[in-house]
Length: 89
Image (cartoon, rainbow, N blue to C red; front, side):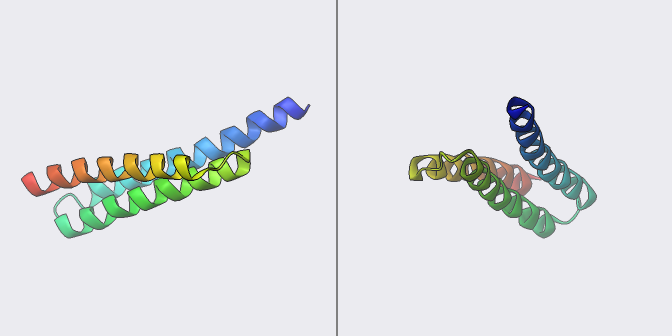
């Protein structure tokens, strides 16, 4: 039974991540003509991803500074790439 609850916790964590990503994609599409709004959504996505990663690893009880830096670097890379695409349009 303990195994079931563990899977349920992971399902809830990753469902939240999917909702965050889906909300950002919807926002980018909805504001497709407003670059400033898309920039705000993109930066918010990066922050939400980092916060999600911190909370996920905190629940797993394996949160370390190295893991936080991994999430920050991946978020920064994705935000940078998305902003390049926004400025090219």
